[in-house]
Structures are given as structure tokens and as C-alpha cells.
Length: 128
Image (cartoon, rainbow, N blue to C red; front, side, top):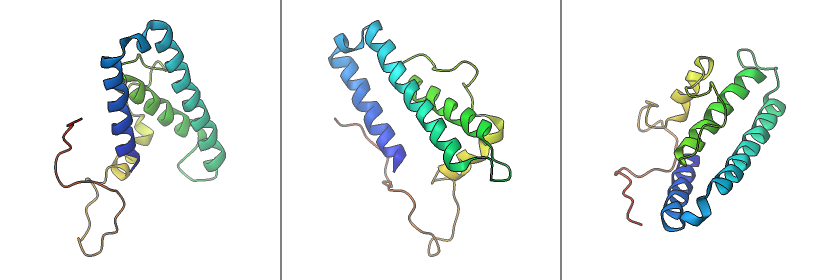
């Protein structure tokens, strides 16, 4: 579900960039990047609060590294520079998250599976 929202709003923002270049001056982009960075910092704080260091094999540094990686991914998806240096690839300690976050990678018996994501069986076509 979250990936659908990411795709939708990234597409909207990138289309807006084409139609209203005046909203994407260097000053505006600096402002937008700072907004993204604030969101990443808030998410890191929440992740550290919610998870803490009480789960064996998962700690605050791992959470921070992964969320900074995601922040860079989102910034690049909007055509912006990365927010954080050194976070261009998924941290090795968090590669397992990709396996669980990709609904197409999870293999189950059809009759035992529970719906965990909303997706179409066809290719998403951008007809906006």
C-alpha cells in the first residue's frame, strides 16, 4: 500500500515539475530537500523510539542507516541530489528488509496466503 502512495505522489510531483518549472527553482529545491530531510530525521527518531535497542539483531544505528538510505532513494526519485553521503545502497545489515517488503518475492501456498498488499495483476500504465 505504501509503495502505491510513493509511486503516485512521485509521479504527481514529477509531472508538476514538467508543467510548472517555476516551482522547481534552485531555491525551491533546497527548501524541498530540507523538508524531505526533516521527514527522514523525524522517521529516524520515531524508529529509534518505537524499536529501541530491545530487539536482538536490530538496533538504532541499523534503523538510522536504513532510513537515510530510503531518504536518498526518495530524493533521487524526485530528481534531487541525495540527502546523505554514503547511503546510496541498502545497508548490508538491512538487506533482509527488502525480502519482506517486496510482496512479489514472498512465496506461499495460494490458499494459505493472506492479502498483505493491494496490487493489480497487470502492469501499471501511466495514462494520466
